[in-house]
Amino acid sequence: MTDVLARLPLSAIRVFEAAARLKSFTRAADALGVTQAAVSWQVKALEQRLDQPLFNRLPREVTLTPAGERLSRAATEAMSLLRSAVSDLVETEDGVLSITTVQSLGGQWLAPRLGGFQIAHPRIAVRLEASSRVIDLTREGVDLALRGGHGQWPGMTAHFLVPAVQTPLVSPEFLARIGGLSKPEDLLEVSRIGIAREWDEWFQAAGVTARPQRSDPRLASDAQALEVASALASHGAALGSPIFFARDLAEGRLIMPFDVVARYTGGYWLAYPSDRSRARKIVAFRDWVLAQAAADPLIARYAAVAPLEAPTASPLNRPL
Image 1 (tube, rainbow, N blue to C red):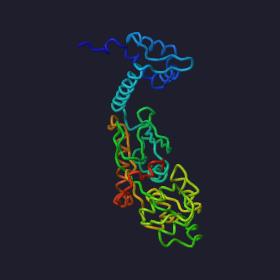
Image 2: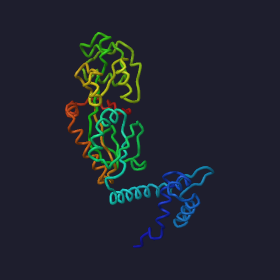
Image 3: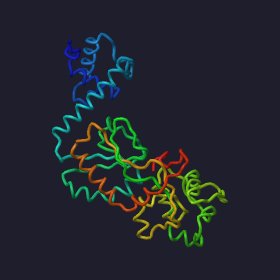
Image 4: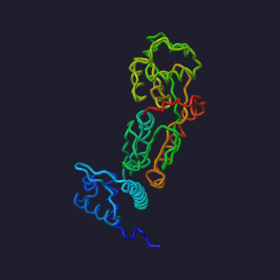
């Protein structure tokens, strides 16, 4: 049987994949280090070989035809696999490890430990992006992610790291100003920071059935770290993870008034493309960070807490 690829120039497939992925002949030319005219010529030659158009050429942009969409998906997957295979063959421990994570996990738990990884692997430089933006690891040149969820992402290998738990955190100054907290119900009447639904879930975990006497929290953010920063400034009680803010608790900047946590289904995971599972820098970081998680006694302690029964209850519905 004749190989259909034998009559297609693979250089044209590579050019087409870049143009389809970047949605621009000009950007594809820049990425490939060729001229825009060369990209246009290669795409046109491919269309002639296939006897059908792959792009709609509009005055200021190009869009894929249905045939182009189909070929683009296959070409992107094939190029990604090829890049990964070549990278695994030639990669050493030199280079940059690019990590994306959310603010609280990255800033409070991972960053203070990263020095140990760099001592153990001095030839790997780490670039850490702490952001709520969800990044496509296969397209954006990022090696791995530490993200919240349930660990089921197509094409990804995921390892559980940290359980998702929250509990009220207050500063010593705030606690003194309100005259202390003797029982969970007392939090119904103080200034609270965060999402009202998440406070309701913590009250549920604490066995509090009454509704808050005060209005809903007046301050909420898209990141747990920012809400806890407000609690550190004595503006109220904020929900936060005692795992992430363990140092602030140990050094007395924060107080956990009650030993009650709301544990959620899911958690925080290390994830990377399955086809890069043998890349040396990914293997090095995977083994190191899993060992860090295994050595953290708070992770083991709170992982043993039963999660809330409500199926929709999860702070992972927003970037923490």
